[in-house]
Amino acid sequence: MSLVGKKPISSATVLYNWEPTPGSSIQGITIAKDQTITIYQKFDNGWWVGQIDSTGVAGIFPGSYVKETQVFPQTTTAAAPNLTPAQGFAERATINLRRGNSGLTTVTTEAPADTRERCIAIKSYKGTSPQLSFEEGDEIIVLERWQTGWCRGICNGKTGLFAK
Image (cartoon, rainbow, N blue to C red; front, side, top):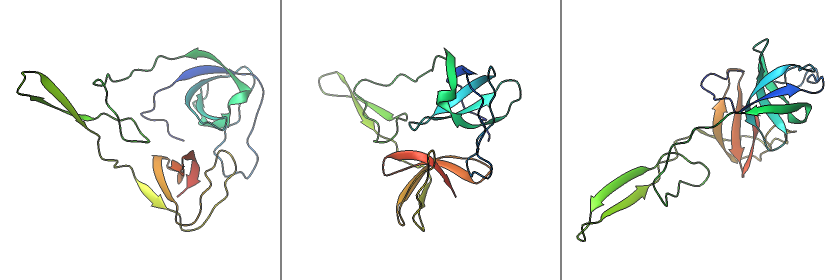
């Protein structure tokens, strides 16, 4: 699993040993008590994505098996007042300034087009956590793609993993 370009969100210490189920389609990593892991993402279903500091091995593991020891500050881009980004994602909006007759500057915003990759499910799939479940014909927005063929996406308001 590649974490190139990802920003870490925290650091954690492993509380309990855990290893993925053999033959599982999830890219789980084996973690051992007292290892330190850099956390890159947390899913709402309790699974986290991280990298073991001592080995550089990255993958998915249960967040309940670790204790966060440090939360890293996240940098954000300041937005103009009253910006409403397109629903589902918060990206920079285009700001156009113009001078009105009153001499005051008016700020108008235009939300950027949602150019994220989309897939249409060709068959239904009932995923188990942290996999995504979907029905035939559902649209899936691809948020992230890994070289293994697995992706992270959104379908019907739920985020999870799926194979493409």
